[in-house]
Amino acid sequence: MGRMKRKVCGILAAAVLLAGCGAEIPEETVPVTSAETEVPFPVPVSETAYIPHSELLRCLYFDERDSNYYDSASVIYETDAEVLCGVAPHHLAAGHFIAGLYRTAAETRGDIETVVLVAPMHYESKNALCTSAKSWDTAFGILGNDRELTALLHSRLGAAYDDDMTGYDHSASTHIPFIKRYLPEAETAVLLVSPKAGADFPRKLAELLYEISEMKSCLFAFSIDFSHYLQPSQAEEHDAETLQAVTSCDTTAIERFTDDNVDTPYCLSAFVRLSELLGRQITAADHGNTYTVGNAPYDPTQFSEGVTSYYVFLS
Image 1: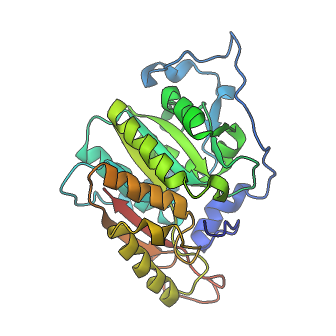
Image 2: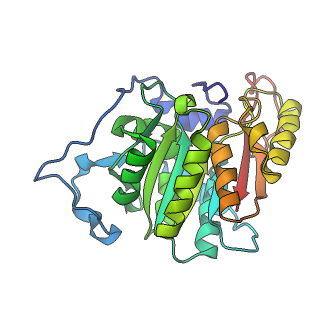
């Protein structure tokens, strides 16, 4: 997998995402339950309002004003079929791309029970994979945790229960309010993936998610940013290479990519493999980078570390 760096490219992304960065994250936190605090399993979304606040994960990077902008700037992407899987960024500089993914899924489907969110792990941990059994406290209400699917991520893939990592890493947390806003009846199960996941991980994850697709109606969302730390012309070249690999389902090429192409090759490969298992064709619905999404002239002094590229892929 490509190098995982803590720096976030782009002025807009940095302003939103770096507010909480730099804190040390405990390596693992197993959810603590008792007779008084344990949430019955399974928990319908309509019945989660009584969950104690301490038992919820918080959306650390949410801003209501920005959220309204993402909504107004987003579009429902044209698609010939219902959306089963999708890729969208986690940088909020491209928040309207994230909104577009979930708006499109909501428009094409009315039966989504759970959003399975797969995202890269940006911080050091002894665990290759992390998840949490907690629900999320959002500005749009409580987003319930699908504990059945979360337990499968734990038992079948070995994902460790780590509430701190799951809640703190912006790769997952930034998507959560969008899920609740556009898919209010859905629950979620989150999987954070580190570079230590292993070469066989994309296949194992894709096969498990395919099994899950036969159990219940899910949207499989992958939180992925693309080329990092490059000048715009270089980023465009690598983005074209990435686009070719994704649309041709060349997982061998994808799994060899570095940060020049994508922040989490294993997650992107799993998305492609899952789309193949589901018999779905992948289309690129949107594309941009840190400076183009802001509609501002490129100023190399403002982007001294280069730009980050964004895609929305649907299948």
